[in-house]
Image (cartoon, rainbow, N blue to C red; front, side):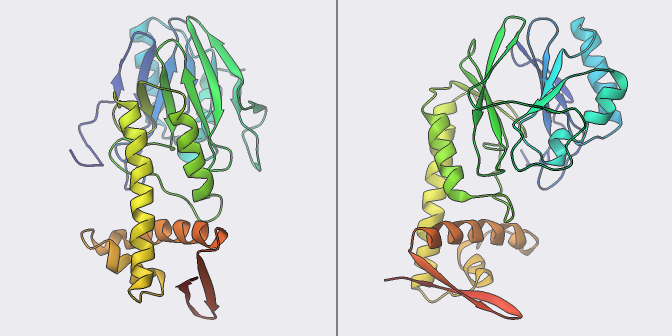
Length: 284
């Protein structure tokens, strides 16, 4: 199955407490699109809103009718990226007065009236309890939501189905990301509802896979430096030998996130050069 799966269902009901409506925004960064989740037996809580694609509202309305629901009771967001909160204006136009909440952290330009969610806060729904877990790394404001009744975790962009999460240069931090993976690992979740791609039924294995992947990438970067690679483009060519050149920019972002972490740990040094890529070296 390809990451951008044109046959990925627009609607699904993966459990009797959870429904999924696709955000209709497929792409290299989003796969088949952003998943939005309706959680609860009646008056469901909506997790994330998609990117604001107008047709999403029709797909959502169709699913609500199918389930016998009038509207979401409230919206809770995983983080500030537009493919997760871009649909808020359309939802509020359709459902006036709809409450929207997220962790408000280093934010600007949020939808008017967005209220704050705190780490550890419990959100009660009909037959469900969701606990907010602060999981920075992909974004400083990122929250996962732990569904206690299913021991399931809504991971947003912390963990994806079919790809790895990007650590953006501006607001991402790989050290925080690794800490977040270990934090959710300790929850003992059994199932993962990711923001992109299908349900993951072996949560423990997937979380460990993510941790192992990042540790292996770190070893590869240190080896590339030891073999004489000095710039990020050189490291990408040495490490990502099987991916097409069009993906090298994204790969370079991943390498940079590792180098910044290693620099904080005092294991590598950066030499900045005007008009040219930085040169990196091992600290013995």
